[in-house]
Image (cartoon, rainbow, N blue to C red; front, side, top):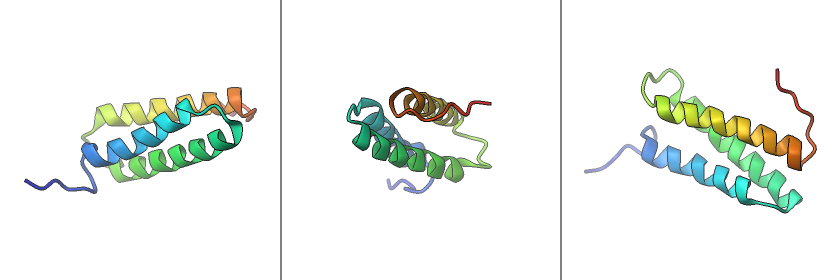
Length: 85
């Protein structure tokens, strides 16, 4: 049985989640900045894929939690300003 590689959680979820985990584990600031950018891109692409989809609520919550974690990581480790509203 073949799965749709463009919409279901197994493939898209694994892609952004791996990049997010790579960023969270990185300690070298120059590498961290690049990994955070990669993770953010993967997260936003996944959010676009899921927009308008009434399913995948758990993944959508995980995506938003990951964005918040990356924002904290950027302010704490990369000295980004805290733009929280």
